Length: 162
Image 1 (cartoon, rainbow, N blue to C red):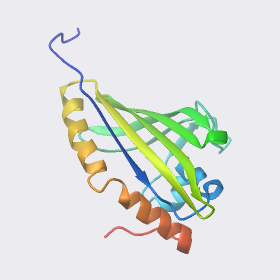
Image 2: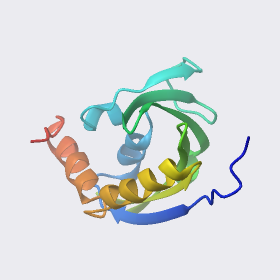
Image 3: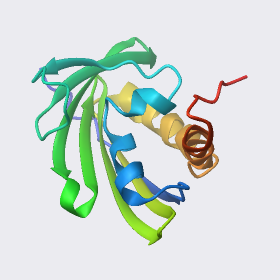
């Protein structure tokens, strides 16, 4: 039975980062497979299709981050490599999130990636988790992403968290 007193909250935030690489090299890093190269702890389990390449409707899971959310289910909802756009829908039992990443060339050796997260709660706990999650995600306006991507571009190695 549906709780008619529940009111879903939607929270959105965006930030731009500047990876030190041309767009052809940088854009693939925002796909689930290539992200494993630079993101410590990122271990997606690809469910469908199993070709190993990114495409629309690719489905995978990742480990949860607490709050009783053991698994995040992901789907690539948009994949437009010709305009350097990828979008994901991520869900748990408490909430869902749309992640939109748009890249553009800034110069021959730099790109800009605008990363937008839109969280929606599916219950009161989801609303609460989302308020905390969006603040934590954007506490440095994704400069932590920029640092680890640029470290990988420079060294070919993941930047270890302390």
